[in-house]
Structures are given as C-alpha cells and as structure tokens.
Amino acid sequence: MKKVFTFLTFVLLSFCLYAQSPEKLSYQAVIRDADNYLLANTDIGMQVSILQGSVTGSAVYVETHTPTTNANGLITIEIGDGSIILGSFSSIDWSDGPYFIKTETDPEGGTNYTITGTSQLLSVPFALYAKTAEEVTGILNEVDPVFGASTAAGITEGDTAYWNDKLDEEVDGDVTNELQNIYLQEDSIIVLTDGGFIVLPPEEDPVFSASVAAGITGSDTTYWNNKLDSYTETDPIFGASVAGGITATDTTNWSNHTDSTDIANMGYIAGGTYSVGDFAQGGIVFWVDETGQHGIVCAKTDQSTGVRWYAGTFGETQAKGDGPYAGEANTAIIIAAYVAIGDDGNTYAARICNELQITEGGKTYGDWYLPSKEELNLMFLNKSTIDATAGANGGNGFASAYYWSSTEYSSSNVWRHNFGSGGQFPRTKASPYYVRAIRAF
Image (cartoon, rainbow, N blue to C red; front, top):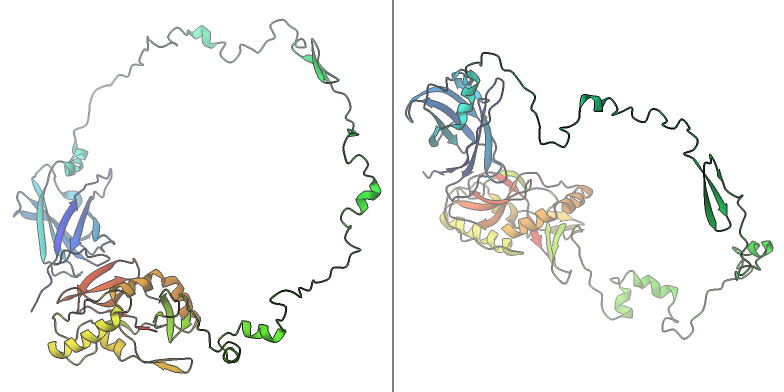
C-alpha cells in the first residue's frame, strides 16, 4: 500500500514575550507534500512538546493544535495557547535549561503524527525568565540636567516674569495713535496716520459706453431665449441618398438578420456570435474563439460535491492535455485507460461528465467532458459572471472549494483548482472534490 509523505520546512521560528500571564511563543512553519508542493488551505494536526535537558529529554509541557495552512502553505500557532496534554507553560523554570522544542505533524489533520522535528531553544525565549530578575533596592536620586551650551542658558527667573505679560500695558498711554485713516481718491489709496476709521466712496454700477452691447435695450432681452419660437422645424428629405429607398418593411429585417427574410433578400442567413456570460448551447459561455461563433460552455450546476478522480487503481493514464478543448480528449483517454489499468465499478469524475445529459430549450446535449487545468482557470477568471447567469437560469454558483481537472500530474496525483483562493495544486487521485462538466460548440 502506498503512503503519501509530507515534508516540513522551518522558515521562521520567532518568539514573543507577553508582559503578563499567559506567556506564549509564536511558531511558524511551511508544509509540503511528497512532490515538494505546498499544502495550501489544508487542515494540519500538530503536537508540540517542551523537552528539558537534551533532544531526548523528558517533556515538561505538551499541547496540540489543529491549524490551517494559508495560500502559501504557512501555518502559525502560539505555543502556550493550544490544548494542553501535559504540564503548565507558565510554570516552566526557564533557568533550569537547556530546553528543546519538539514538533510532531499529521498533514491529514488528525493525530497520526508522521513528521517529527526537534530544535534547541536558545537565547530569545529566555526573555520569559526576565520576569524573575532580582528587585532593585536603595534610593535613586534624579538630578535635572544642565544644558550649558544652549542658547537659552542665560534665561533667568526674572526674564520669565514678562513672558506672557510684556504687552499688557500701553507704553505711551495712548491706544488710538496706532490706527490709520485710509482714503480712496479716484484710482489711488491715501494712507493718513493718527486716524481711527476707513472711508470708502459709495458703489455705483459702471457704464460701458464703448461696448458693442451698449445699444441692447430691455425689450431686446425678451427675445433672447425665444428667438426661434415662431419658426416651424420640418424633417429634411434626402432624395439623393443611397438610403432614400429604405422602407419600414426593410427595417424589420435589420434586427432579425437570422430569420427567413434573409434568404429572400440576401441569399443567406447571417451567423450569430456569443459572449462570455451568455446562456446558450446547453450551459453558460465562459470562453469564445476569435470568430465569436465557437467556444466552450459549463453546466449551470455542479455534477458532484465530492467524488474521486480515479477508478480505484493508481497508474499513469497519459491524460496530460491542457488548454481550451483539451479536456475532451483527456476525458476519453482517462476512461479508456481505466479499462486497462483497473476499474472497480464505482463512479469517478471523468465518467460522471462523459455520461451526463442536459436538456435546455427543448434540446438535449450529451457531449460533456471533465475540464482541463486551463479550462478550469478560464472558468475561475469569469466566476462572478458565470455565477450571475447560473442564478438567473435556475442554477448555482461555484463553491469556495477544490474542483477536479482532467489534466494528470503523475501516476498518483492530478491538478485541482481552488475556487476560493484561485490556486492550482496537484493532489492524490483518491481525494473527493467537486466536478463541473463543460462542452464545446
């Protein structure tokens, strides 16, 4: 029986001291599988032990965690905040070291810990021991510093008495001689001292006698906004135009260029084009070629919320195709390969798509297939548009989960697509994931 091995890469071991109880240590690690691929957005089981004396010393504290990796395969936990199995983290005597940290990991999220690593805790965590430092006794006398080189060194206590009060009294006893009189005389301003007010001449509307509008009268303005009220506008007739002979009957055919009148008037039926998001050809259009007349649609609902990829036996199927339309050939190869490799009779992803039949608009479509890795990505890029069209036509949007592709990675792994974060990662063929069938037109 084959086993899947995972590799644990330590990328950062950092420690944070909390001033008050409870004390905690921050711990981070990156999780990879046997093919050195990151295990992104995956539940992981961990057990952490603090060993005293040596790497094989006795455990003074043990706790467990069940973190979830992020999109980069990174997990972050706080040692001291897990589910306690043994001891008390706050009771560890850090002065009685050395101490070692032992991590045990189950990449499947359980307690079957298949990965073990041990490393020594050096100087950083002993910040926790600083709380036990001896108290300082005696009297500490604080002395104000003297800044002899400062430009303010010569300021005396007597100087500060006038800091806020030096303008409270009028020096010459006369508070009126600081004001001025200002006169406007023609185009000049005249300033006179010893005054207490400002005099300006009254305002008068200017007269622009030289303006071209000088002769406009009040009655002229009456027709300013109404000068065209007495004119009658008539649609022009372009008798010499090439469109002069177009009739109302002709315009009916303009917007219905695919109906039977095209045959009589033009000798052919004009072809239609499609756009991403159209509900046509049995599903929802998510990709069209450069002509706009051909492309790929996906079903408006998921065909499974959890089905395996293989037919019960691991082995190379050679379904390596990728890109638009590649999933159709991959699906046929997978089904044929499992006839030779071994089929236990239970259903699987490619078989569900191959046997699918959907009836839309009175027509039944039966040529569905499992999408390739790139076809899955094209659907993810148009996810919001597809979800909206599906909802408007009785379907459902994509789940924030993994969907199977038909593109094989190895004898035991296949590419899958995370429709929550958008990443694409290989995974064992025995895992159960979502399926959304597609067809070409």
